[in-house]
Image 1 (cartoon, rainbow, N blue to C red):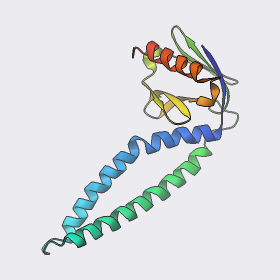
Image 2: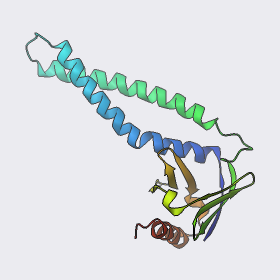
Image 3: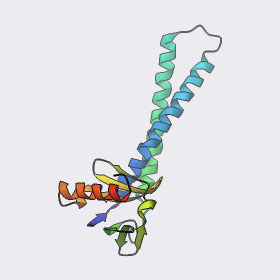
Image 4: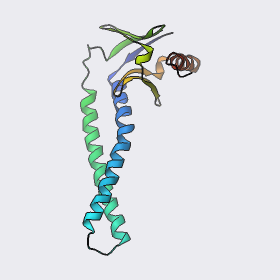
Length: 166
């Protein structure tokens, strides 16, 4: 199976958002929860328990924490979008091939073959498939690359079969 597409800066940004907001967001929430508990305990040592005060403190902390995470993420995403070089191997025309010994990406400046064992997982977002080769490295496959839903499903089934998922 062959898929031809073009990877744009926006595609690269969407991949990074997928990675950043996926597991990292849950981790940030967990860290914030731990800090809220510690903060509330420290603020209320020796004070009588007041549920309204505890809830108010928690809401204020989560609001500040959320604002800081949002600002940090926006700055990070702005910088990330500017990282790839227009003439490098990340952006531009791509041809993806499913070969017997692996998944091949061909671009104007490079050719990469990843064995099927080297693909860690496939993740899906609204507009993309990401074939991960590491925690933050993946082949970006826009859904717009497929001629129709049938070709898209055939691709996913073939990748899952080759990866030994079924």
